[in-house]
Amino acid sequence: MFQDTLVHESQYYELMLYPYLNIGGKDTTSVVMTIADITKSKLAEQQINIAAQVFESASEGIIITGSDHRIITVNAAFKKITGYSEVDIIGKMPNTLSSGQHDKKFYQEMWEAIEGTGEWQGEIWNRRKNGEVYPEWLSISILTNNDGSPNGYIGIFSDITKLVRAQKLIQQQANFDLLTQLPNRQLFFDRLQQAMIQAKRQNKLIGVMFIDLDGFKVINDSMGHSQGDIILQKIAERMTYVARESDTFARFGGDEFTCLIANMDSETDVIPLVEKLLQAIEVPITVNDIKLNITASIGISIYPNNGDDAETLIQHADNAMYKAKAEGRNSYQFFTAKMHEQVLNHYRMGNDIKIAVQHKKFQVYYQPVIELKSQKIIGAEALIRWDHPVKGFVSPEEFIPIAEDLNLISVIGEFVLEQACQFIANLNKDLPQPLHIAINFSNQQFLHEGCVENSLKIINASQVGSENVIVEITESLMISNKQQYIQQLDKLRENGIQIAMDDFGTGYSSLSYLKKLPLDILKIDRSFIRDILVDESDASLVETILDIADNFGLKVVAEGVEEAEHAEFLNKRGCLLAQGFYFSKPVPEEQFITIIKSGIQV
Image (cartoon, rainbow, N blue to C red; front, side, top):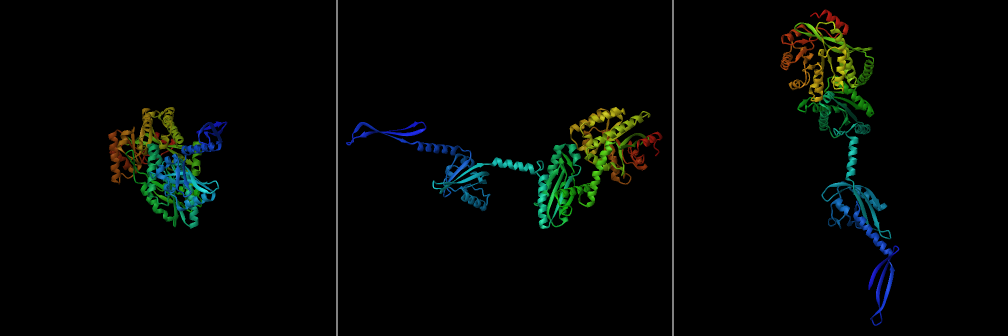
């Protein structure tokens, strides 16, 4: 017998040839040929082969079970994703893959959907053979016989671990601060609004804290933003440590943080947490071998007593925080209606400063610097004054911080420098011995880009002579290890300008900084001079500063000399220069000229 398959124009035929047998069973030369059309069966076979190839090559995992839910077969992707081989899994129930993360209700609702609609799809967490739990997107459908009766189930799934991780990252970036990992402003608002809804329903109070680190801007500008970031991260860690499960600390922006205290019965419920927080923050932080004493000022508002919306509560807590700063920092204040008025005054003052800058309404006063031994005026310190059109003279301690917040301090600083240099240059034309002029540089002003170049242009244009100019920087900048900053100081000195360290002894005094920084003069803060006649520790400290200056070859100016005995004490101990009300208070140009012409009578 001969059998073969013939193909003609996409049709399949089966050809069979076999010998014709006579009645006696003997072969003859005749054959019998049969031809059958097998196209349908051949195409069906091809479809089965294609389906088998698709089944095996599919990137999604496929699992097929019988009507008894036991696994009949799985594909290669299933084995790759789950780690189970056919030997491991054939004949077993699909719950072998269960992660244990879904409850009974989840599976009950899933099978109700399958039996009711014939299919189900959704995210489910399963477990690989190695024990790793992973997310997958799973679709389950019922397999049916020709008559529509069910005979099994097919599940098709894909591993969505990367997708879930990406979604989690997006959610993390949208709701959490990348630096501190604390909730961000948006998430804090959301939680506060939800907490207010719950508090209203349960007749509870909510506390909102606004937290600002004291003096952080100076540290951040001086040490560099990377070091500032380390400080913020350490502060955030301490906040997380003191927080209770129901509390939400968030980074509001910069060095500002907020905290939500929910489910309070009394306003005083917030006090234990805020006191614990202040204690945690003030523990010294060491950065680059520098021990920094960080403190915080905290304002507190209460829902619903101080507002019934998130914006108002945060604003009022912010107002209370500024009150805490005004009261000496490292403390907390509850919001009061009076604080709101003070904030409005602060805002109005800011607008007035902008106008004063625009129309050059500031004045420069001069306080003489005296050589103690000869009692002669050898120079002056330039001090800014502002005669407000309504309030009268406003203290620099009040308006300078606001000007810094408004980024106007560089404009004001250059105005003072220009006025002072021009005034002293004109005055020196008629004097046998030229006077020195000392000008204070704000931390923010000095670190402003182009500060040194602009300052040198102003000094040169005035023809005062750079050797007669002294730039005073604050001691807080001594913590800076930025080589760029030191290079700017060097550039000033290379042009003949002297560098004075103002308020020495009140901040980060360190002999190592005196070696690193290019200094010419130390100015002893007035707080030490005031009690040198009655306080042995202050007297000893002043003597120590004089000895240090002598060892480093630095001149010393004593500030705040208000009595003859102060001057005598300093003179006997080798202090060469002084200034203070005993000699003269700061005076405008005309009065200073009169003093120079007549001499100071002491």
